[in-house]
Image (cartoon, rainbow, N blue to C red; front, side, top):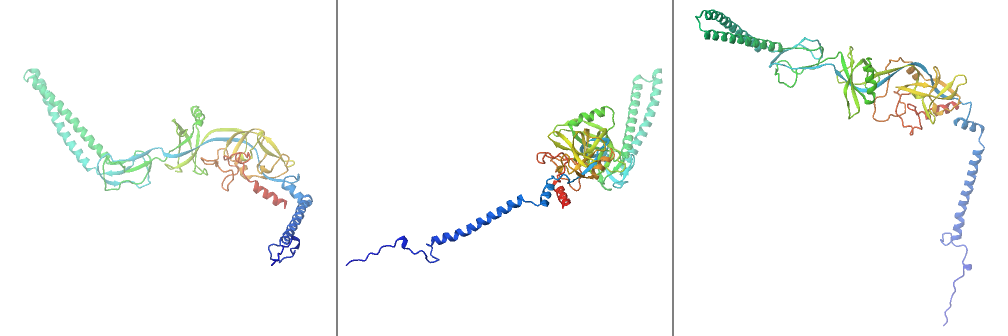
Length: 481
């Protein structure tokens, strides 16, 4: 019996159209996935061509706006703030942190034992030297005085009798009636009674002194603090705490420190006989509290801090300074006469050194002027060379300037007020900080206030240069719109 052998169909005999859900329908699947890829490629090519055409065919308005935004338009004016340079005196100060100390401080203590009977002052009262402040029970010492007076009277009477007897014995001894030994004994008794009288007198003086100590008086002119002992308490001379504290408020002293590098300048001026002025400012440097003079320099330098101490004296008539108050002391060390003064914020730093932007008033264009910076004090600095009085100097907006650019100059009122301020007017300077200050100007800081900035982090921006490029750019775009 023969089996019927069936052969497998060849590839050409396989049907081309299978069921749509058949996974073996590979050609159909490839054709369906290739179609969207091609569509995406066509869309990408069209989009790229559109952006290329748009970038190469800008409208005149768009191109002009781009040139103005990049400062390429010669007719665009850059808004800046300007102030004129002034010729005037520039005071040079040395700033230090100090504390107020009473010129004299006295803690009154009892020098005798007894009960406090009376208090003759009120807390916070102004007292003068010799005013009676408190009374300790003096009766025990009055009794001791009376006893000493009685002993003195008795010994004085015995001394008088002994002197009379000694006078008689002296005559009788010469006549040979009384032996010499009896006369010598009487003479010795006289000397003993004289010593007893002197002892009685000392006891009287001691009792009087204790009575005086029972009445406590003020040794200085000053202000009484809070009462430490109330009336009725028993006080002792050995008590560690006093009865009250008196501080001399007028005059008053300020102890402050300066770096040791400043010692030669201060010492040379004091040795020449000059009276150096010292100003006491509040802790935030916002207000001058009092003005005084430098009294002396300490006799040694603190090696741990590298500073030396100075003592200044203030009249303090209005009681503006208080003991143990922290203040900022400003020592006037020199005055630069007839110097050209500009704000610190106007100084720029470049590869060739320091320079400023000066505005030509004839055509309102900016020009670069190299300058030599002298002494910097607060928000102002002196210029040794490069500028003349009344030159208009750009104080704000330098980051958008270049040589020859046309500017829209606006007066900087803050910088002008700082320059025109009197030479002896108190200036707001930054308080001593242990870290670098931020270059950004706050709402409470004066314009162009000096601060310590890292040039590398700020693009070589000078000391005190504000970082306001973003805000100025917004102003420029608003003007163009």
